[in-house]
Amino acid sequence: MPGIARWKMIDNLRRTISAPLTLATLVAAWTLPSVSAGLWTTFVLASVLVPAALPVLAGLPPRRKGISKRSHLRAVGADVTLAASHVGLGITLLAHQAWLMVDAIVRTLRGCMPPDGISSNGRPPRRPRPVTTSTSTSWGSTSRWRAASRLRPPSRSSFSS
Image (cartoon, rainbow, N blue to C red; front, side, top):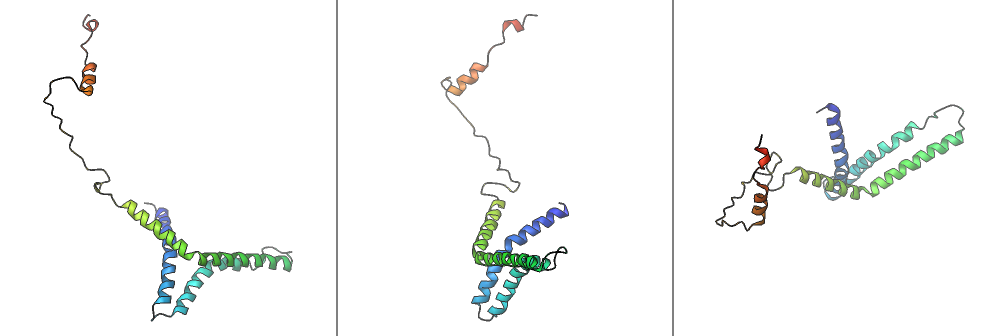
């Protein structure tokens, strides 16, 4: 498997487990008595804020000369508003996102497991063919009649040469 494919798989796994682990960290911090809830909540909020703050920090210096300060501050304000809305929605929908990711993980793992009756190579096990025994000598069966009707004696023209 190429290295880029492995990297994509690892990145997908990271993105899939980030919401459930973030929620589990917050729940553990708030429920366990020996853990500092404020410290862990600050850590989780910082891990959510930093990715949203990077574009804002990148947009602080003006991109080109000749832009008015008012226009630049308006653009930076729009970036801050967008980042704050992303963080707010991300925190608000964290439990829902965690539920969706756990559901996806369970469905994927269930799909990777072989169902009952499937061998490890992915194929169903070979079953012996049913043995049909018939004591009847009549041609009453429709399938036998069809099979017999296909057996025609060769025409006489094929024997004359």
